[in-house]
Length: 592
Ligand code: ADP
Image (cartoon, rainbow, N blue to C red):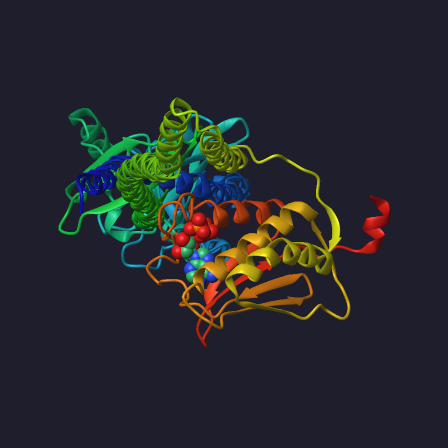
């Protein structure tokens, strides 16, 4: 693993840590979000519960005024010692209470003393008890037709009370009160998902789906408040307790509340105020679902981040691998290129060497040819020159003695020598300048016949035999008559030269298609010389016998015709020289 991969892992790890930190940091906000969502969900059932509570309360509000209108009540209040009437009223109130399912219905005189009560037969009956301290009593006495309050008694029973004045004409003569057990309300929200609580203006919980919250205040009560409660005997002061709550606002109507205790609890509290009663009803939903939701969301986000990071990591690693591969490829390419450059320069150097060697060889070849030529020429010319010199000396000596005929004879010899040198010179000229004479279609037999006529004279003097069987059907070939004749004469002369020491030498001339073969019965070509016989000035003959130009000139002539001159030794002995020319057609002949 190289540095850049380390860097990638570091980078991805840093992003992972950062994502983790962001997730951790955002958790509380996310949790709050789900809490607010919970509060919004709770608002609807809470509204229904508030309406249900209000409907129940309102249903019974007119009752005390209705019952208070019964004439026997005011009659009893005016005649309190009338035991018969009292018994009638007691029974009437008992039946009424049973009908409306009230805990008690009772009649008080203006001093607050209870003169008749539905519970007249019970042990803890209200009869003769004085309730002048109760606020509902005082309100009713002041003319309030539907005074209402909530009380907790020393027994821990919570009640709510309605009261109305009992009038005789325009005069208030007493108060009729009805008490309901508030526990019946607790059932309003039975089965609800959330807990509910109702607090009064002192933040005192007097209704709740949680019995353990009854008679508890959600904030410390001031001494003045406590005094007032004690005075009115509204709640059992010895049972008043604090519900230790820490509240954090979530929205206008919602809070996060933590309740301390042996088992701490947390709730989303959604509240609605009942302004006229100065009550607040709250729904309390455990925060657990919101927390779980937040955790779930974080988990999903975390997983997605992880997947994204994994993908990113894979992508970056792939990129690195590609970059590395490319770098390696580049390196390999550079090495290869360097090798190619080195090899190329080697080759160039080798090529330069080769060229130099070739140049050197050509130079050497030229020099060797020049050397051969100089040697041949000096042989060719020195001998006649030496003869010319001695003939000239002789001619001079004969002239001194007036022996003219002898002098002339020597001068004739000089003339012959000069002719011979002129012939050599013309050979050389031919060799140096190859005149571009025209070529045309020709028939081989005619050329061979002319060549044979030239060598006939030599045959006569030296012996030797030429076998030539003219072809039955002739082939037209491309060439020049005189030059091809020169070639054939040269080949026949060479063949005769090679058989000089034989008494019965034979030269066989064959024509097959465009090919002429000249075979002799001589010693054949020395294998050491095969490669050189066509070189100019190459000869194995004695000085004055050969210039070494015959085959070289012949080779060039045949090449000029587009043909090939080749030499080989015959398996049965002797040399075979073959001239192969290009075939042509009479049509082309006509065209020319
Ligand atoms: P020259 O005849 O003047 O030597 P050529 O070029 O005609 O020059 O021949 C070159 C040489 O080739 C001869 O000196 C001889 O060695 C060899 N040569 C040519 N023809 C024959 C032949 N028919 N048999 C053997 N050797 C031959």
